[in-house]
Image 1 (cartoon, rainbow, N blue to C red):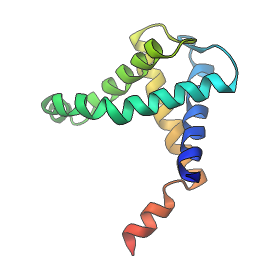
Image 2 (image 1 turned 135 degrees about the vertical axis):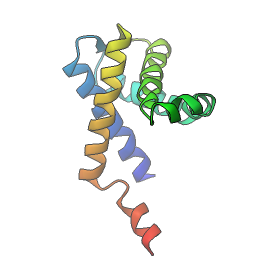
Image 3 (image 1 turned 45 degrees about the horizontal axis):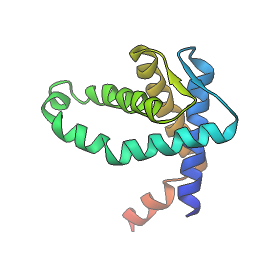
Length: 124
């Protein structure tokens, strides 16, 4: 449970970083708004993204995996349609925002050691 909450906060911080760095992404409200965006984005990535990746598998293979960046941008744009107060202006903003969210989320996961326990269990 602790790992899930920490993952949620990390994603909210990553969304905050994207909104702070890009003019095309905005979140109205305070920290609760960022937590809502992180929750919906996480659900979209867990439920919808695998289906889209399965359907676009040949395109992902053809582009050596780079098409997953486009899928991440689509998930961010879809989140902006579902969460009131969260706005993504253009596809370019969604693309760069998804890239920033991925990098910040990865960096914070490494720094906090969120996935460290999983790696230790695999090594044993």
